[in-house]
Image 1 (tube, rainbow, N blue to C red):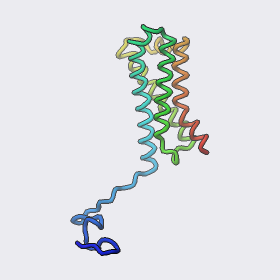
Image 2 (image 1 turned 45 degrees about the vertical axis):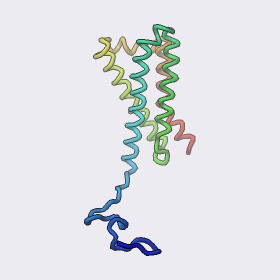
Image 3 (image 1 turned 180 degrees about the vertical axis):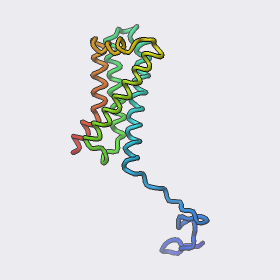
Image 4 (image 1 turned 135 degrees about the horizontal axis):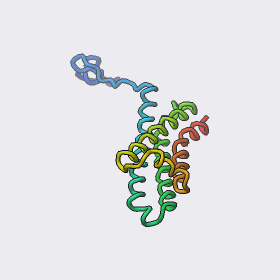
Length: 160
């Protein structure tokens, strides 16, 4: 196990990447796996931001400042979460078509999560819960969601 000036000797198991016949090379991640991981991360960031901001807004912000100011603050939080999730995207792999699919799937997960929270934690029927989007503060929240969901598409179109 000695080295020469040109590099390690071929019989050196550590330098050659094998120890007792096992390879130490790390398998490469596939493009599909990278996209799935990025989609999961983007969805998790937005869902976490929504659950945290919704809880804080209902308990702290709306009672102190009113629903419109609370919705504006939550919108800032949701768009910031969308920017973070977008910044973590694998841009070489994210085409506009994939970004649109990512936004649609994330919207479905957010809508389902929102409905589950409304029904099981708040005891509010789903139609009544989603009717809040017809009010000003709900429209602000819906707009923030749309912006956050469309950020990957906007960036993928800009990069083309």
